[in-house]
Length: 624
Image (cartoon, rainbow, N blue to C red; front, side, top):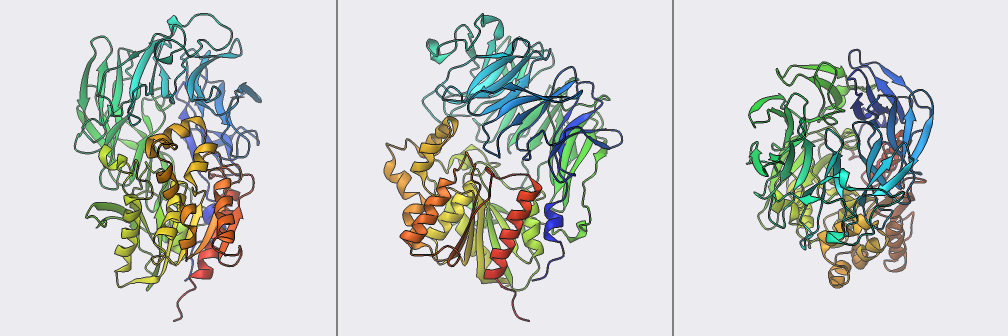
């Protein structure tokens, strides 16, 4: 198999992450790795020119977003140590240097900045669960606003900074989500955390929130944005199975749903002039749709590939009122556009970068469907390498609540360029097909969703141009769990497997997880004590003796979501229970001081090289 795209050049293509428009609309802050390392940069939206402002004092991995201060003098960012995601919140002063602001123990994630810039709204698991806190920049201290048993997320200030809206779950059904609104004027005094977690519903003292009665228990309600006047909220829910969005009037408690309710659709934010930017799942594509606040569809600036509005009502709108948007296709890397909401007119803000790589070498994809073992239709993104006969990589996405669309993916292009046909199944548990399909995986990890993946491999193997003796499964995170599970459950199907930052032992994963991940695991698989037999049976390590295909295991040593102990336990089980030897029947690699994946170029080069060496050795080119 021949390769047109050099490995290091593909892995080193510069990427721009988390663009955010400045308060005056004249600049865009972003992470950018054109220097070979992730740095904070400023982008001119008129010329597309970038200016680097940091010098190694921001994280190498651009996982978490950035936010401007309202005066435009500072940019807030998250800092961790080598990918462990135990974030502190820092300020980068454009006039010089960085300052640590929030340094709680555990994971902290910035949610919003108050309109006056004096306060930061963030969530932290410093108190054993992911709860809501507010940092006072003048006083240099925080106060705890909520004290829930389950995680809080999606928090934001109203346009006056006097109220907050956020999402959590107080109900018995773990699949439930509700939106709450609270007035901050009720929180009084105190130099440290306000409230002791006691009282009505576990709320901090005097926050006095109210739950918006949107959907019955068991459905998921989310908050998107406040209306510009602060009188209403744009919400989402999935009571009708598909995700929909609507406008909630806080004075009257009236709610009107908008959009195309036959498909998943969600709002990004409300433009200051009243336009609503929304996304729509449309059979592998993701159009950007513009509405008014009456729910009238005004236009679709992009219909091909995967497009999105960027930022929010304060960080996504340029000085001329245009909205910052991004778009990718299977053969086109991320481009930035400015979209006029009134006319649908678009102009390029920053073109995609290709360096010395010929973009014509990238392979296109198609959205296909096949039947799983019980007749359920499964959608998938398929890249045909053109190699005949073609080896196959079945790539399994993470989550499990995520999906794969017709967008650009460097790892896939790398594999296709080397002759591998790649298919990404959107198995049961994937988003984009409604609540029932998404939640079908709950209580059934390692069950029918794995049948869906295996059925995709069999579907491809039946094609005359596929080499059914050269089939590999590859995945990261939950996809890594799936790769392990495929190898132990369907040993006759696979000739090789690659498990990257994957799960192998569910009970031990629960014990080592952060508090909010424990809640997610309970939602997905029930209580680990009450369902101990299921948790153990659905752990790949329980069935390690079944594995036949050679395996490459990749894992970051600082991974907080799927600790490296998951890989080490499986490695040890391969040696002691399966009788295999590392370096012979399987390969084991720890990725240095890395966490749960990374955008860092050096990290990508290492992973690409390990993938290439492993697959090329096991699937040598067919003799002509």
